[in-house]
Length: 271
Image (cartoon, rainbow, N blue to C red; front, side):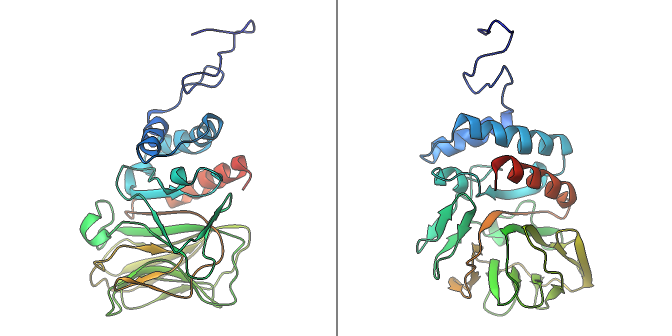
């Protein structure tokens, strides 16, 4: 490889200062290109340094998800934001023109995202009694209800998260809600996790609320984001606050260390 006088590698072929990109970062870039998009080399390097490499080293992050989209830090590169970081499936479709900018996606009133992910038929890591749904939101409000992500079969069997005046509320393969009455500011991590037939956990940043809520079945509908998929149709209130990322996977997913890694990435991206 050509080198400068100080022994530093040139920026070329996916390398910056002689540091090669991880196979996972390169695979994501290839999926972005296959979907018709691009990503700046410098941005991909930031993702590799601050997200891919620490996530790979962890061992229970990328391996425990069916889908992960990081929407923020990609202004001008929307296809990259819509491309699943985990595998080629589940390329996100914007519906009714949600707003996309460097903070991610938000609804302007009726816009939302079809995640093209039905955990009932396409869930590999996400199963009835081992599952997690999560999303990041920037400077959220907790004064009115917003439906953030998920689906409902129309008979109130639900897999979703929402925010309201209480804090966060989550349903996971059940008809019963589990609330978490914390209202943080800044870049907020929100998740609902199931670790067994009755064990449920609502997670907002480092605050966790556990409960015993029986699982029933997984709704057989695509998950929507910025609203709820109610038996095939978007259910308001749409989320007008920016979502920075979202993911779905198994309860073995290491959300504690993911939260640290993703926050480091957001800082590096200036979000």
